[in-house]
Amino acid sequence: MHRVCAVLLAAAAAVASPALAFVPAPSASSARSRTSLSAGEEETCTIQVLMSDTGGGHRASANALRDAFNVLHETEPAQFPLPIHCDIVDIYTDYGPFFPFNQYVPLYKIMAEYSFLWKWFYEFGATPLGLWMNELALETFCFEPFKQCMTRNPMDV
Image 1 (cartoon, one colour):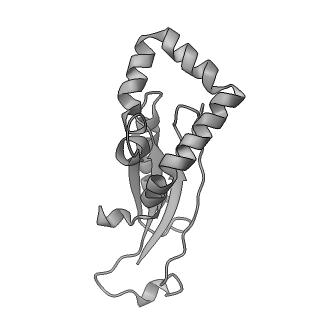
Image 2: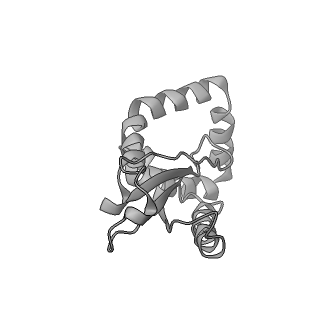
């Protein structure tokens, strides 16, 4: 039996700090009791961590969450009875449909090297026009690929 939860570490160019949200997804067999599992079947909970390797410790934060969930399962079995699998996904690199979305990591490194680019993108992105353009582009081009990522079964990857 497999339960899925989503943890979002949003680290896009338009997002200044990580966001964390738990979204439990009911499984078809979630009503089945733990004692009714067959001998080789073990119930797990998957937590999907969406992040971008653009610096700022997003990968390290995702790994720290994974480690913390493992410790919680081991030390607090009454509150965290299920083994927890963390599915860490670099959302833009793995699911960005095309340039520039799937090239955020190398573009980030260029902007970090040339601070005037960073300043220009940051300031433009904070304007109403920049926010509107970002939202329009993400909804138009990234919604479906990101939805595919968040609805896939990480055990099939």
